[in-house]
Length: 104
Image (cartoon, rainbow, N blue to C red):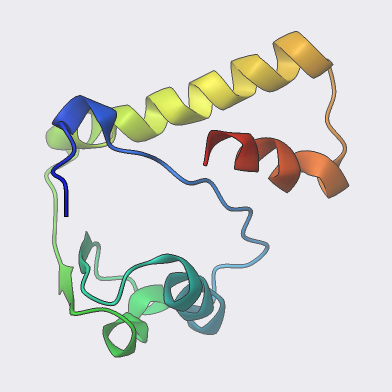
């Protein structure tokens, strides 16, 4: 597998209507490679993930480190918002996932 430079790591956005563990597990099963190792918080929402990936490692992050760790997430959300408002002025919920898929 080709190594992707850190600044070019792709992001995939998916609309999630609820955050229960079954919904999250199904999304991970369909979207994340089975050899992936996930580092997330220790929420019960993620309790079923180990069945679908190589490892799920709960981690506690100090609050002052969160902005640095989530910087790319913030940028992706900001860019998506800017794109949708700037180009379309308003998006209907039924079409939102289609617009997010443009970034795949």
